[in-house]
Length: 292
Image 1 (cartoon, helix red, strand yellow):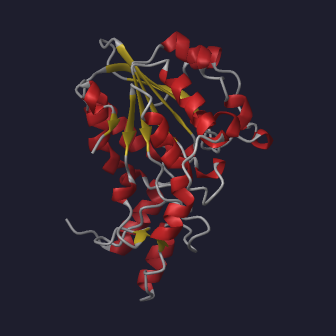
Image 2: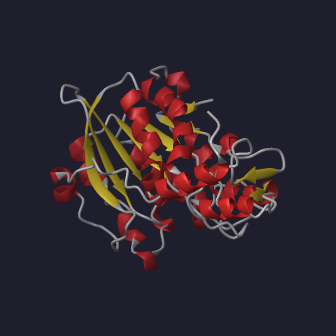
């Protein structure tokens, strides 16, 4: 069914205000064993989803504010997977990335996240961990030379450490980051442009800017995954980028993909479901590394 782009962008804007964690309840285990928390933020979450009480497996979701906006797709994948879980634990805080280790800045209190998950992970013993976070801010932009530098070593140390606590560590590739590349604000900016017959061509990130911002960090994560036997990477750039640009709107529907200058819409996160299900259910070790 074709959706009017004005209505579609209004709905996208409204969906960004919905709290998809309304069934994510306080977890006594998280409250007891995860106490090193940075400053409070509206997008931080320390809770759990109760799933199948008859299941024996658990799953752990961690990351930064990306998790808050992607939870619809992540949770849909968990519920639709053949593998059943009794509980999905969620620990996420804006600006902080568990896989960045000491690269997390002290000034934002994110540094206290380093090692802070160890106790809760040791208690929960999750069968699967899903991680999603922006990481480009931790590596010097344009540092494309893939060497085993301090950036690589922090990713290596942190990813391998996290992987020790689970049978499978699923790492979602960060999506493009509009901030600084465009004047995009939210889906209503698209609706306004359409209503005023304005061009939408500036709502896109040049591919060279995407690579300059994105590759320095993600390429190092991919390099670490080569030595991580239970890591699975979920590529996402093909969902956003074409040959020359990464459009911030769906070219067919003219509906925004982003809630703001940093986060995708809940509807956009549904595009992750298929690959996440494959990563959750697939048992062949050769599947580890990459879902395609």
